[in-house]
Image (spheres, rainbow over the protein chains, first blue to last red):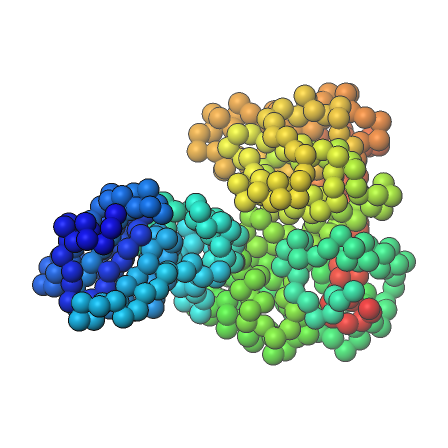
Length: 158
Length: 308
Ligand SMILES: [Zn+2]
């Protein structure tokens, strides 16, 4: 879809963030990760299932007056590894980054294994995962070796 | 080969070559199982058994004494400050400041890896959670190597609780490093191996079969590793009653076994191997238990720098 025809669906924002190339159907999860409920008062645009030359179908999220923190970008990488993040200032894209799934993911999600040492309260330990596969996403707990997959990750990030 | 100063968290941390080196040292250690060496004369080994296991504990204590070293220890959480609220990290930090190496046993999975992050001295996993018990796996492989002369190319069956049993899981990882001809994973549906283990077998190119029937594969096996199927694992007791007989090794099922089948078991055993099997040529589990001390002597001497 060309830039002009996209304008037909959602108008440009002045300052904020455009998250593009989100896998179709996951835009709501991205909003969840960002903690956006719609009651914040700023403009939020959500476009789902539009044509994309790269992905076939994709979602787009535009958020006015908000730039993402690095930890938010890392979280988005977990459920939308194809996403690109455009920082908009005065209607212009001033920075464009592709989210990148780190090789080691620390502290964002919990190990699904209730008997994992990383789930013990009162230990100075952060859950830590190594990437086993990126597409579909599969992570492995560094401590207990248990896998966590896309659905579990999405459920946790809600 | 560098054992010195290394953590021993999972059997897969080691290469087959390193394990064979360990076995050669262990074979030498067999001669000194009744004497006292001076290899670790001024060394102290801490045994942190957050979950009790008399067998494993005695085995490490004996190994350390035979090497001329000393042991400090606690067993189970009840008697120590752990119960009063001290966490694992603080306990490990304390032991790390006293001892030259720490042996840990813990109910939680990944406890040994976490302890190794905290400690400044080598940490040896004596069983954590349901997947890893590397020193047991070393003893298991050693028994095959010692009694059979080789580990590669055998038809190996693993019987019992392959899902929650740490000895079984650890042994599956271990034997897979030595190119088994075929691996038979024999368990009730509920207790099959985890997908993590299956992925490992596939990554190693191991030819394996999962089955619920021992009697259908017994005649193929060179080695049968037996573990217990616990009643508590079954949400429905009736389900347990239905399957329990199929995972018991007795003379009847062994009537079809190869002449030189080796039966291994990490012990203690309850009733998964009938007593009548003890006096047959298949029973290697007491021999296997007796190798616990020399293998642990070799490992401690290598890791704590008593020998190269
Ligand atoms: Zn874990």
